Length: 414
Image (cartoon, rainbow, N blue to C red; front, side):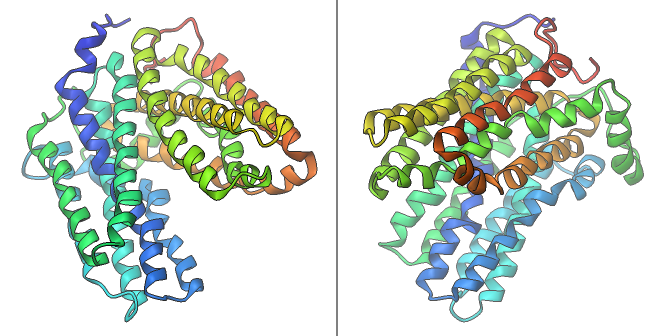
């Protein structure tokens, strides 16, 4: 077991500052092809059906494992394998954001769609390399807290490209908003130029075939490989099912849209960021495996707070408490979950294996969330949230094999 350094040395290290800034760079583009872009399209009176189709430009985030082997196999001629790709993808993201800003949705919605697709491709590519960089740059004992810092930077960036961008759009042209966002990508560019290239023992794959095939051979050669994949799919399924119905539930209880925005959006985001940071510090003490147990149980119990709210009815204080608790535990669980996935990658194929794992996380978000409306109608709100809490049990049971409490290490060779 690795010796755990003093907490303050990890928390206030240059490596953590690099993760915070990298997380900001990773999170900034997401809403610029999502809700923020939708607001611009609506202002330009683009057809509502066409606006809905813009959701398809997000496909690269789901399919990024298809080209992730290229980022493992090829090394740019400057800055090294990870920092070189960081710089290239961040410049590509900045250029694509500016390109969207130069477009004209009213004149050519299809042209905007092409540019938005280029932006999501560049952004997904950046995510691939930043996830790999985080895994390779941090020691095992730092990985949990480093992940929580990265995720905090990511969510702060979403505030900037979401709420701040929308507020600015009431005062300046949309084109200026997108140019400003493109300029903020300089945060990532500076980080790539100043951070250190990770040093790993294993060389990059020697051929493209090795980069494509060997990551999968390496993973499925391990003990419990299929159980690990099942765990990745199931660990947060209950929490994600509950989150899918939070907004209609709160409105159904009679809370106003203003109360929804103030509590669910503001309280929720702040609680989630705090939960991630607290979870990161806890992981410095407990390690990733034991944190998965503690945070997973807390996640399941926090969903029951919404069942209690359903029984209590329209009480603002209980709403604030339930939302804060659920989002705080969600932030803790998400940090441990992401850190665990990173710890299960082989550093020779970090980009490809991590991209595969992160793509799997989208399965419960889409498939398990799809029937939640029918479940809520059939079971009632109290029964629905109780069911969501119970849905967390299979993921917790899998911890007995993939992350037993007694083992401190999270190495992929376990």
